[in-house]
Length: 361
Ligand SMILES: Cc1ncc(COP(=O)(O)O)c(C=O)c1O
Image (tube, rainbow, N blue to C red):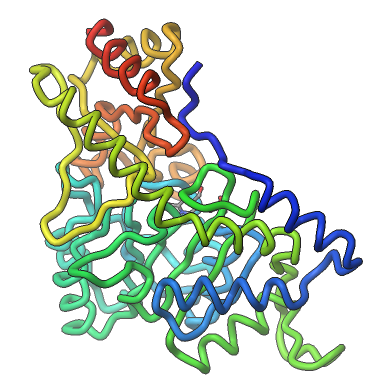
């Protein structure tokens, strides 16, 4: 089976983790600090605060922004559930804007149509590694006095108009979950240029503690460990080359698949550097599940990201969200199919993916 993801863990990562274990410091120490500094500087942000996962990073970030009960946060429903869950954890309300059916990212026009007196923030997701249209989104946030938050869980190193994602908003979040473009197993980070906000995040992530046993608020234990950070430091050194390989794989797939009349290869935004966390094609509605089964039965580990918009999940239906909020997201979720694009694919793997897709009509 050609897997949808394949973590690239080499001797460097293994040696780095063993080094931490031998040091005896199994919790958070100077390796996390080093990782925070190197990752934030790679992205181009002043401050980085590591966390135990992308979700826990987003939760503390949203809380640090002061988003609370009664506030609305406009976000996309076409993403992993953790994006909108992080709004609900702070008792605010996720308001779902529709997506652009070509890029799969939140549609700036729909964002504008969802703004009310209660809107505090816009939370965008650079889905599959493709940047959102940040120029337009930044302008909307500025015009309406809204905070801009970026979920960059799938977009390490992606750029919009030459600027890395994670640097457009007040605050951004990255995930280093084991399938991401760079990994620490589980792990995440909050980035911001705002010193006061960074300070708040650092307190919330660590039990609301400002000095030892001096707890000024109810925080969490959402800390990253030095072992995770040791993996992250090694991965960061290879991120650009791994992203380059993803882009080459995507180029090959698009060249080989673009002649097939019954599928649509991924669209890439103008002015965007896509980092191909996923390579997602669109197939006809009603045929997708059959094609998915066929690919998997023939050894190509295709996946469906995501089979329904977040608000159609039972947990959200129970909160009163109904059908029809975002028609484009509802339609697209019935047509998407992600093919392996990760950097460990060989030329033979790529050829097999193409041939298998052709045979699965
Ligand atoms: C878009 C998006 N947001 C948030 C998350 C949550 O990150 P984590 O799994 O590290 O908690 C993920 C990762 O799965 C994701 O893909």
